[in-house]
Image (cartoon, rainbow, N blue to C red; front, top):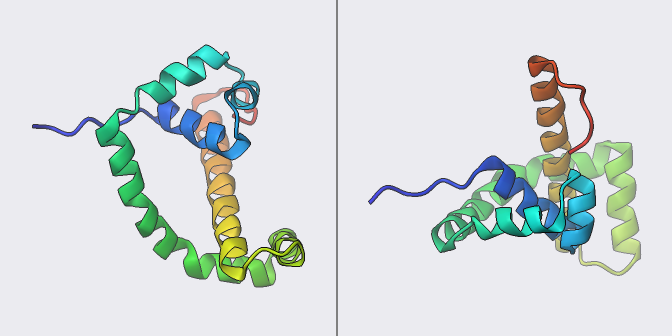
Length: 125
């Protein structure tokens, strides 16, 4: 039986809703309605959600050393890391937050590159 691949928009809605912690804020961030966000996340059936979870360890492994380098040498991410540590977060948790920031930055760069190639007026998703 072929595996169902989740759509990019559904995964983006899922990621933004998880990042903001609410469908309403995710809807504002993506310029959609709450219903559209809910519907897109609903498209992620059990298999797609499990496949997404299976990717997470690989992402963590691939981002570990870049996150360490970013936390040491990138001024903005270094400040974020130090702020998290000062707020009482464990180093592992703070480094995971840096990994997430790297993913957000990569998604933004990918979006703006895609928009430029397609001639779309770029705005943050």
